[in-house]
Length: 308
Image 1 (cartoon, rainbow, N blue to C red):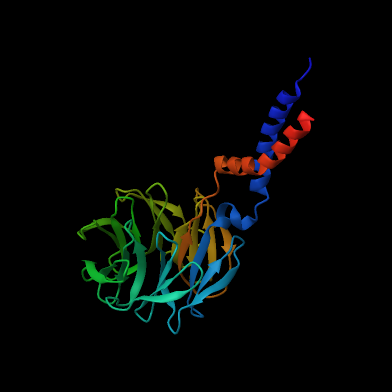
Image 2 (cartoon, rainbow, N blue to C red):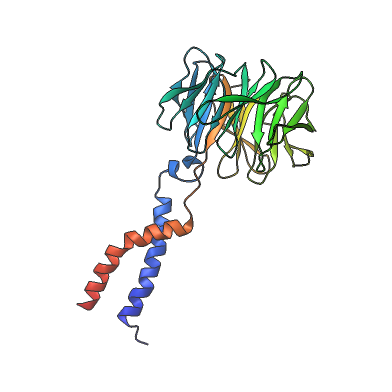
């Protein structure tokens, strides 16, 4: 059987594109694929500063918070980082590390930050047991009250716009609807930090060195009870791994989907709060398009040589 040059060229081009897509993906540096594409920020209470952690667990200073250590971190939809401090102020950091004041009123011993889906920033105030809501310009108003109990360390939004707040003293997690109405959600011993995964489960780190996984009805199951030592912050990466800051031994533990722990980093300074800027991996279709673009000049040269 005789194979026509055009047919051979067509088949070879397809194989070449697929091979080039594979090489394009696997030749990317580690910081451009998987976890390495995500940007991890942690609060350094010792310096005080905000540190950025790379895919290998190495920390470097992203910016300094002045005389007061950071108490909580949160990222807005545009990748700007917000940090509350013990000085009762909130600073805004652009992705390139430039800092500007964001708010200095309506803040009283801030313990947690969270953004809603409209870009409003919420602050848990342990000093006066309130939740303050700030618009994008930094104008604040009281969103809700936690009664006689302090909001302490944990706050997160679900996909429906409800806000969940960990409170100190009564071992409860309170739920605020978008209008600010509060209701009991769940009872967890010593709740401190919390975050949602991509499918709507709430994860709560406790002062008893445990992480619980809760459904939207408030039913809790134990997710992890090892690899923890004073969890002070929780956050998911784009691959679905959960990261826990350990305040007591100054480490970061990474948990897989089954709750299996592994040491991710040992920064060596006192940690408080974590935020992860998610950067999804490029899709296969995007890589193929990239490879197609790279292959066009080569295919043109092959066509010319065949016509000769």
